[in-house]
Length: 66
Image 1 (tube, rainbow, N blue to C red):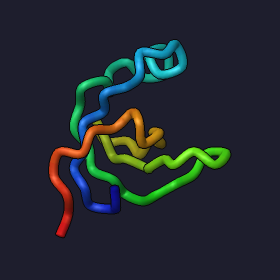
Image 2: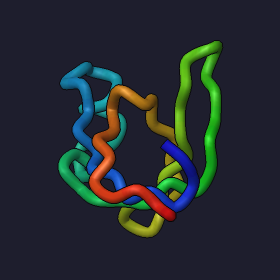
Image 3: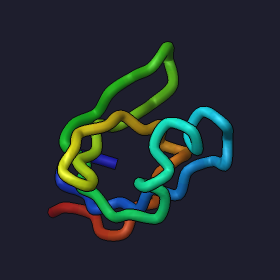
């Protein structure tokens, strides 16, 4: 995954994700930049007009940037 990729937020069904922002589940966003959370790969994603960090396992790549 890299900046510019289109992704679908699939979530993990965990309480953290569901209670934090359930509206984002199933939405499509674009990766703005890479991030890390305590050694866990993550990405900053613009979705629903907001920039939010998601772990890589919470994202599904739809279209890769060139």
